[in-house]
Amino acid sequence: MTGYLIAVGRRERVTGVGSFVQRDESTFVDVDERTSMLYVSRTGHLNEERLFQGYAMDHEAGRMVFAGAPSGALPDPATPLEGTYFTAVLDGPTIRFGRDLYGFVPMVWSSAEGLVLVSDSYTSIIALRKQLGLPATPSEATIEGRFWTNAMGSQQLGIETYCSEVNYAPAGTQLRYETTDGTVHLDPFDAPAYFEGTVESHAQAVTEAATRMVRSIKTYAATGGIVSLSLSGGTDSRVCLAAALAADIGDSLHIGCMPNNKLDLEIAESLSQRFGFPLNEPSDLVRGEEVRNHVSAGWAALSMGIYDVLYMPRNRRYRPVPFFNIGGHGAEAAKGNYGWRSIQSVGMPAPALVQAERGLEALGVAPDDRWGAEWHYFGFRNAIHGGRAILSNQYVARPAAQIPLIGLSRSEHNEFPAPARGQPSVILDSMIKMSPDLAIHRFDDARKNNSFAFITERTNALEGTLDSASLAPYEIVGDPMADPPPLETHLELARSEGFTGGMMLKNEVPRIAAPVAEFGHLAPPEVQELLAALVDGTFPLDSAETREKTLIGKMLALTPLVS
Image (cartoon, rainbow, N blue to C red; front, side):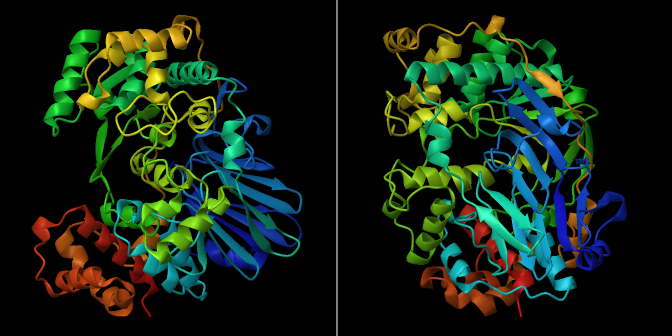
């Protein structure tokens, strides 16, 4: 995924948008006698009734779908699939928009009379609204709630964004645009029914999930692409390692571990020696051709507004084949991250809680659900934080995010309900199903280590290990492609809002003076003090931690809204 932008509505309004985007990235479609659609993308494919970009994993049909696939193979927005993709269906008087099940590809939208804008970029939508003479009004209630500096508040808390006219679609939801009256609707997702309805027993769900993981990785390799696994000393990346080794894809698999964490590297090296796989092996194909990234514009285009953390790779890499970036993100959607509690038990400020509760309602989850915090994690932090690899790679692969495991984690069949951090979970069971030996090897935290007796007990409970050799890759439908450059339309719109050059705190902090002056009063007293220290230069930037940098990101997201 390199970005997308849709404008749909009355023909004259859509034509007006066309003057602000790159023509070589744009496709115009006449929907009916009054309605047109503009589709801006580098990687998308549009036929008469559907558009699609990215990839979808259709486990039920046994296929991996890419751009260029026939309409019948493409996922429907109302029933999203795993993967990283954006799609739309031109269905008579209704146009429906959706993206991958876990929301790794963001979907933001805004409407005005006779025009709807849909994109993965909050910044692009605001910049277009301003250039079209439409208002971009600060949402003070949202800003107040997002001043909560907990990590849970470092991305969207609900549907509302910093701008009153711009909204965010949580994971699983679809948008509908009615051409007859020009209205746009967000259809809620019924997350509990979608996941829990798949579970028959604990062993069945774990076996099905493990099977899907192995077949997925075999299919990544079958595209002729590179499968790159980031390994740490924890559980989540190791369950991906179990699937990758079980898939037995030979030289297509490249396993790396960052050297900046000594314990992670030590455990990764011990795994490499014990299980006989190369670690951090040099490869020109994996390294690819380094291309300097558009750091400030890239962050503003693809993260700003929905993700406050100042994270953007300084360089991107061009590889001439498909590149599947595997990480353990997504596992916590099943094993838990926020402590298996209600959203009210988290202790967030009242303005933040209001947003979070409305976000749960969009997921089809009651605001007082006993595990509402974990459902919120699924719909927001897992989606946005877990999907940030999309900043440097269009095919984000998250094998540990599995429908059967998420369903089992919330089901009465789960033998490890609401596990505490580091304790046995459905994720650990899926590793045991694929490789008991990997599950018994030591982890980065002694609480995660398992005895031989426990592994034997769980292997028996799961009815033995998976017969991975008998599993075939899925059918490949469509055109797997190498990563193209980022969407220039997004970058230009970000630059029009003043985001240029690199991203260094000494350059970014002066930009926040105006939004601090206008919106700082909405922050709690301790945050107001920190903002004042940042603006007047008394806070030492070289000591800035994640909290301070994220606060700067929040203020930068408000710069387009300053009056």
